[in-house]
Image (cartoon, rainbow, N blue to C red; front, side, top):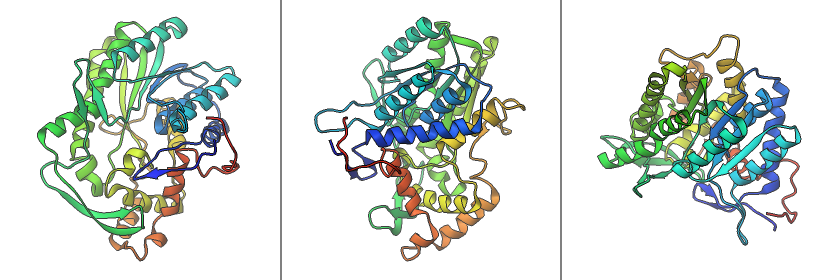
Length: 387
């Protein structure tokens, strides 16, 4: 099959297996150039097939030489439809891990479900004994509980609508977007999906089954952003979920203090993802930020951040490094004063007429297509490839 990118709105409905393999390979090569990390030996990554979860798995495997179990929810190829990028990423990762004698097992299914939790626990018991690290990197839009109730998250404000500049991805115009306020039920549903309840459920299940090692570390990923995006990420419906996630970290530490289970939130840098592409206003901030950070030489993608996090802020000589609130700040370069001041200068002046000059539109689309295995150097996209 000859596979081409098919973009609908903010998602790409196709993925290229060779492109995904090359993307994974380049991330592995980056980790290898940075040297060994003296860290985790047996890790579970929940949400392991794309973005920060995939980068974490690669860094732990090829940096720490850790055995990894990855949980994802991806679709195989069917008929004329390609598999999802996460499916191809996982297959590529496994192939390269096996080639170097690394243990890598992947479990495909709904991470919110009891069935997948039990399958993971059985695998750990039978093949690893225990895990010493649990990464929680889920970015699902909905969650179904055991009683059949489904909750769907929303990207809305609380109280008042939020109005600000926005970038139209289709024609590169700068207009205005309005994000409406969420209802109480919508906020509650968003917390159910994106808060820390399922993270706590995972830790409880692992601990009860005695497959969570003493002194284990668990990290959940989140994002805050600058004051510009506070109405969305900090004060909005997602913000309430993020607050719940942070509170859950404290609860995990309290509940499992006897086993010295250490729970942290890592606040990661803004990167292009399918989820972020769907939020009005946010992609405009991203393309301005990308240009500023690249010009200053401090831009990082997922793999650079995860390598730095494990090497310097988790397993470095200074131990686990957090801010005053106990959070790991991988957005430290993004939030530097000089970066944010320049971002706001550009934001205030940006328009349809100058957007291509003052923002990194090209970089945004390069990252977007790369997520699905397209635009990768050295890949012949005219070739017929097996799916």
